Image (tube, rainbow, N blue to C red; front, side):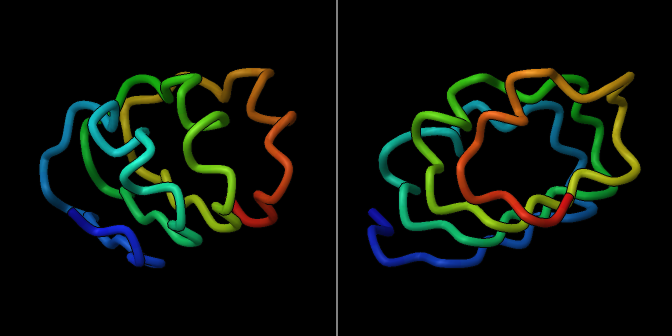
Length: 79
C-alpha cells in the first residue's frame, strides 16, 4: 500500500500495460515514467484514478497514438 507515493519511475522494465497502476492506490501520483517499455494502450482509468498526475512519460513504447480522452485530464502538463 503506497498512499503517499508521488513519483513512480518504471522505465525500461518491459511493461506491456499500466492497468495495475491506474487505480485508487496511486491517486497521489504526480509523475509516472513508463518510457521505454512495450505499452500499446493507455487505459481510460488513468483519467479517473490518477487525477493528480502532471507528468506522464510514455516515450518509446508500442503506442500508435494518444487517445482523445487524454486531453480531458485536468492536470497533465507534460507528456
